[in-house]
Image (cartoon, rainbow, N blue to C red; front, side, top):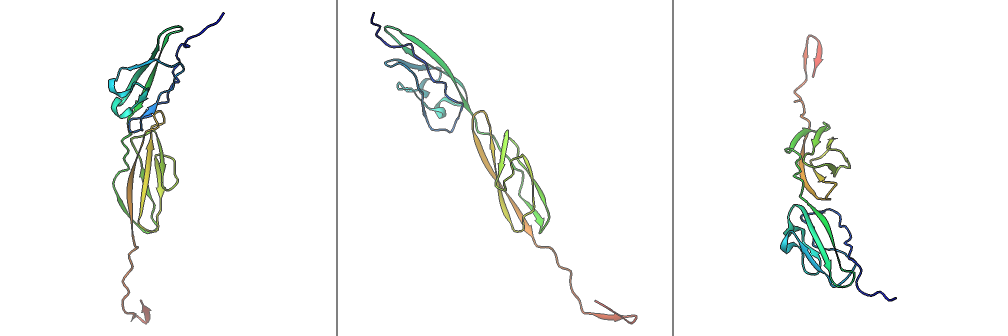
Length: 171
């Protein structure tokens, strides 16, 4: 007995991707089939998926083969949005004084200072710009913002002329 023809197609499930990612080629077994999707022009006839055209959300892609061992496979591609990351306003501190920086709007954070939490304490000795990257771990989407910490020198006490009062020298 000789069996010939195409095997039923199987689409390799793509990972969630960010709306700003470059187009990806969707992989499938089988050949000679037809691609369709619920996002119209986001999927080319060769299986190239463009997340920018698709937009944020869940999108179904389907690959159908005909003939012997024909079949259809459908998968959902999740397109994530960029997190709206904030780190508050720029601040000024006196030299040697700590300040707390807080990132919001994402699930995970990474600061240029090396911290990996939403909130970090820094004590810069010179004016420093700190960058925080906020990431959505499901889609891998990330965005960055910077916060300037201006370091002001400590004030100096005025030095006057020494004088003598009640027999003691007073600075």
